[in-house]
Image 1 (cartoon, rainbow, N blue to C red):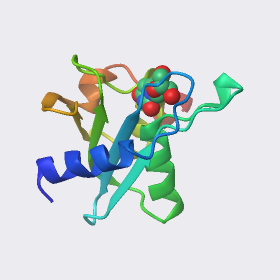
Image 2 (cartoon, rainbow, N blue to C red):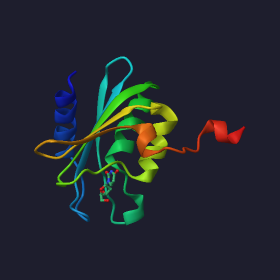
Image 3 (cartoon, rainbow, N blue to C red):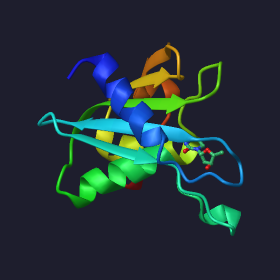
Length: 130
Ligand code: THU
């Protein structure tokens, strides 16, 4: 799948976001190592802290379906400026994604492209537990 198709899948997932409190809709599409694409959107809750980000919905769905390694994730928001994943999502992506490619986009264009290690340069991970 091309980068623009992956962005398209994230944009489509964003339409299913449940964001009545922030009105900030996010869509994500993650590509597993076998090429499978799994999407997610943010899901808010009246108890705000229970909200789940689009990136974690996507990777948790993929993990629950048996995928363990990932290549790329595309994230789409409605913001003009680039919107990288929040710290919690970076941490979860690092656990399973390794140094995956993070493609950022809004509804009009790609807004950024990073390696996960660039966004989370000093990660806490299993090696830290030794
Ligand atoms: N959100 C995400 O879905 N992904 C992020 O990485 C940052 C924030 C969601 C959570 C909440 O529903 C809304 O965006 C505003 O923070």
